[in-house]
Image (cartoon, rainbow, N blue to C red; front, side, top):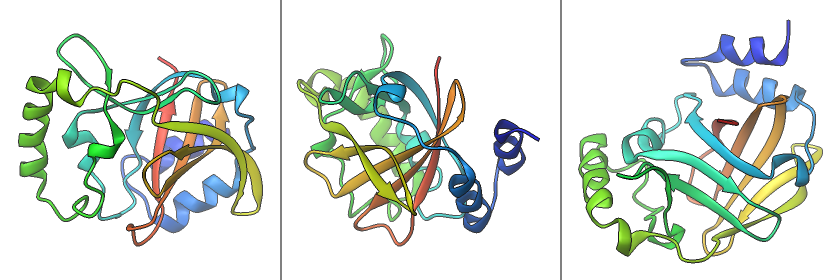
Length: 176
């Protein structure tokens, strides 16, 4: 069984224990390996944030190079656009009803010129997470680090460590 098969077996819903077991079994990636634009989706593990990114219109990430990362690409009227990460109210994520998040998504589409990131909002570094040194995205202005492991040549499993979150949040990135 391949790692891609293992990931498929965890979707659409799994336990955090099973998701972390897969994350720990995956090989590391370098920052160069993850350069490029990635389409994102959540891996539902029962985390309080499950469904929030999808409801908000999260499209993925643009990991252009080690210093130029747009961590939050949102679905826009003319395609994905980079959201200014400092506008994300981390203290409210997971506490706001998904219906309100859907409403905020409609506002984002109208306010796109005002909420669009003008400069990168994160950097790539290789850091050790859960005993393995691998590529990670470090936000510039939020207490968030996303660590990446390779599922296959087109797929990464990400683990978000955010200060206000009670436990890791997992997501999948694929090359479009």
